[in-house]
Length: 113
Picture 1 (cartoon, rainbow, N blue to C red):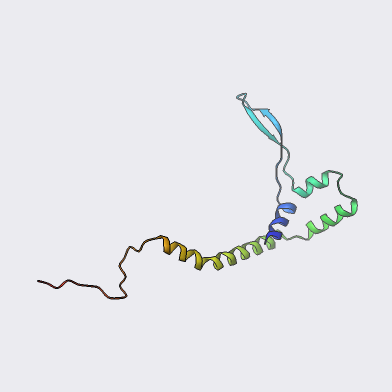
Picture 2: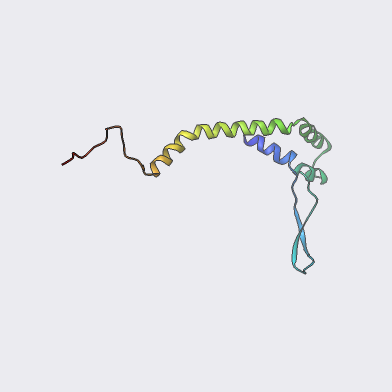
């Protein structure tokens, strides 16, 4: 699941990076940000990669299907939730006192005098 999350964040999700401070209309301090870009786009803007490495990363990004990744992440999360449901319910039941008496042994009734 984490490889899918990483692919979505690195190749598909644009982020903004803080670049400095400025002043707003009320002369207060305001954080300034750059234009939104994916981490891959930010890396490609530098000269840190060779042309071959850049091509490989761009081809991989172009092969990704955002909807398929989102569905797969959702399916895996649902599976994890279902696997943990029984244990979670048991822990919850152990913490919450029973509001009703245990009726499996019957109900005691006082005899009329």
